[in-house]
Image 1 (cartoon, rainbow, N blue to C red):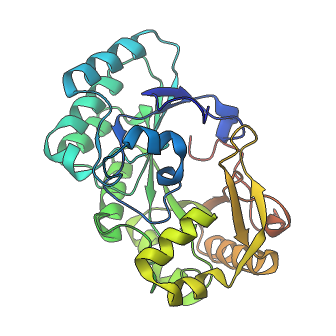
Image 2 (cartoon, one colour):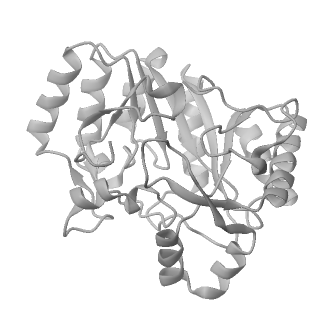
Image 3 (tube, one colour):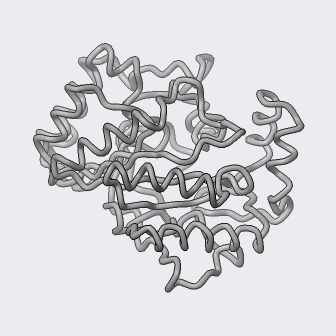
Length: 314
């Protein structure tokens, strides 16, 4: 899959949730959110598609009218049942909300034979998109990326404030849509302190958001170089102190580019147990992402911290 060009629709990757029983949907090339930790920006298939343009200056996969026509035609075939928005971009980008293209695309998807769309976003949908999703609550799984805001910010400057993201998510939940908070990727030693987590989980509880999936940052040499280039060595050295650099692992069996370093096992386990305990004590329904949590660092008591089986937020 990694050697193929970026596609508007692509089957789920081997080793991912639900054993790939879904399709990725990539309506945009690039992502204005410009998060430093974004895995997509370092993947060759994305770099080839972006070409000489900036990754942070997203463009439609096709000219808008052609894009809408191709989406409508492909989904009409009826063989795509679950659609993930998206693997390599964020659907709710400001430029496509402002020009109405996001709403037009969403309308086509929701009117199609697709049975379920799984949205994972750091964005904030506009009123048109909110109303479209609210009109088809059984079709939508809405996953909002949000976590405590620590001293080190790896999210891009265009990412909306956490409070705005949670407000939109809570409204959608009130319309009958299943909403899950993605506490991901947590930075060990930066965002997983007990006091910060208690405050953050208090905000979730106050918003009525009580479903959480959590996971941790993985890094590779290209990501580390980008971190240093933008933020300097001092903060990044502090961040990387907890990583087991040198003990890398390939996370998807058919994709050689998915080789990353994880946090040192004992520190990762301690963090996982702390987060799980706070979630449990707070009465949250929660899982630890099974895709990015493998090996000795993920060996914790499953009675305390269940692993996602691929159905939690589907």
